[in-house]
Length: 145
Length: 295
Figure 1: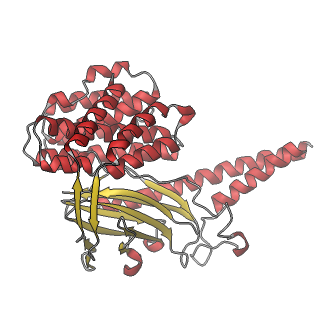
Figure 2: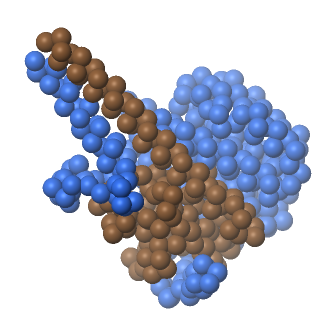
Figure 3: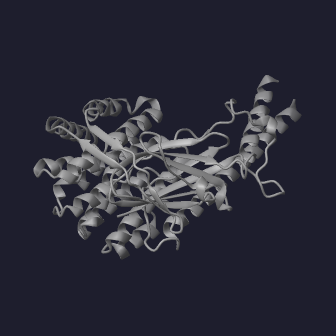
């Protein structure tokens, strides 16, 4: 019985380390995403919407709704690791029409959207299963007027 | 024996979940196919739902673009901060003060901004968010507070850091309340300013909040710790009754994409209609909700 107890403690400790490692991986990916808003990719820096969208994905899609205001340019940045082409994101209009998917552009890790008139959109995020089947995916949205 | 089995099997599952994202020797992710069952509850997004609230700074920017002067009466007085003793009130009012900071900074109201910065520092300390609003943030803010673009970036980055910290430390209910507070404050600006002097752009911005209101209610319901959000959700559902009557006509038009510059330009048409009576009811309800939060 004592051995059993020792084994359970060992497993529990290992699992804590593993989870901590996963959280650290997510943090690294957040920094990659942040660099797309603040780095040298654009002439003007984008202002963050103040949120970080993180999901542990496998075969499922993560979907959320937001509003893009007219008169703004938005940047969507997504990453799931050091190789930036792991994440597919798709932007749809209120009727479900696809406005854009980075799948058609080699899973580009960021894309800009000029929005002359306000539009409620839904954004779907998934991993490119040919490249990565499970892991942490991070998305960040920024805007400029 | 059962107890020990539970101790072992749970960590095994946790280890599997935590390690499954590691790369194989070939450089690509790999996982045993037998574990990948699209119908299995294991193979879902297990971080919960994702919600998005547009930045309240964007409404402050719209207000400034209409050439309306700075209005100090719109802000939640900093003196109220000492009355916020629960995490619920602290989080909601941190969102409100964050929006007030953004608004005053946009209008280059340095003294006002610094007062709001100080109260934000106090509330973030109480909520354990010092990491996001640390000395480096304060120093960057003070050095750049005469540059509108820099200030917006610095403040928004700090709120993003706080959001990331709260979500990664499983405090999503606090994150939701901060977002809700910030959104209510920006809607309060729009409603009050439109009441003082009707403005077509601001009226339209109020109508554009329909989707965001639905998301705010959903996020507060999802992270309703011990029913603490019940009263606020009920108030927001009353507001929803009026927003349901905002009419949005949308027409899809194919967007154009410039692949070289990684830019897509949307081309759709949209028309937002709000009856004056409905707008007045929305204004009244928003004020009631905000009053119950700040007082």
